[in-house]
Length: 245
Length: 245
Image (cartoon, rainbow over all chains, first blue to last red; front, top):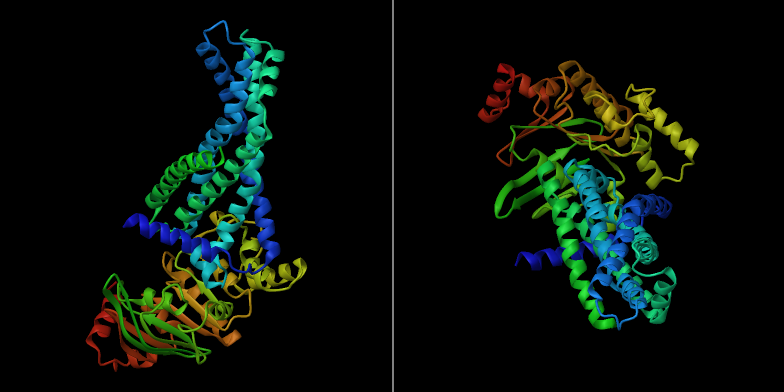
């Protein structure tokens, strides 16, 4: 029953958000500010994680390929395909659900419990639209950009790890990566990034917006935002894979 | 003028406002007094549209706020200024940006004109040279004054204040009281103040509404309270308790 109530409230929240902006210029300015916060602010953690995930995938794939009959370039194939299809979009978005999602939920939640959201409403501003819409639009632009960077860094990390741990040469890695490369996998990667970015920003905004109480409840809303975003990312990860592959 | 006609409100089956009838006059400081839990804040939030009454009418100069469309409600809200109990200043904005916020959203003023208006409002509440400070850098009394400055930034017709003296020392409380009284007469607006403070009632109250257990028990000028002509033991107890404190 609670689930149905929450889903219904989420749908209404989404509907309320899309009303005519009071001042488009202010919304655009806020969207750029959020793009900087979400995009530039998340770049270091995304870069570190994607590089090392790519590197670890190379080492572990090499460990599992014990047969001498399998060409070493297969490692490049496995690393590049798994990075594009799964590791870069999913792992990166799970991390972003923690970083960006908790930030959004706690920011809006704090505004809610300190009556700042009420102040917006009393002024005649659509608070859901003003607070959440710029974050969602910024996420839809910036998270796919971060995933593109994560794709490059993941594959680059795999290549560098292969070279410096003596598993395979960069040439072998590149031959393997190019051998089965299809643009369709990049397309799927971007579809996942777009869907996941919407889930992270909208669920976190929703959780923050419906916070009531005090500091404890803001913390709970933040945790709930991360958990629900992660679960929904995994559910949609499966659905997208099932539909598009 | 604002008129409440048979306003009822309940939460989860528990009724908190019972057939509220009251008139708040233009150009006067209308005080709503009563013990905590008596329904003052709920009534105020119904009046500004943060809660929707179960039944009844809230008439803003004969415009029924309850039964208007969302867009029409937003229109009336632009004529409303509100000082929240916790001030509800936007943490992420400076004093200047807080006061300029409604101007930025709803007026076509240039940046210079906005700054002039912000400085006028700051001067009106006896605050100067705090433009670039953030709310966290201000004292309680200064925050209240910035809250009032933000409330009057746009030309308003109605001013709502929820416990404007809470958390303030007696001297600062009197400064805020006098400020609200002066602004009411200067701009000829309908001011409604929720208060526990009998000193406020005697200093600036012009029309008093006493609420007890979700009902309006008494309404009239402060002179009748002073003369002991209220004829309501609940009100007498409230006044007596205030003086003991």
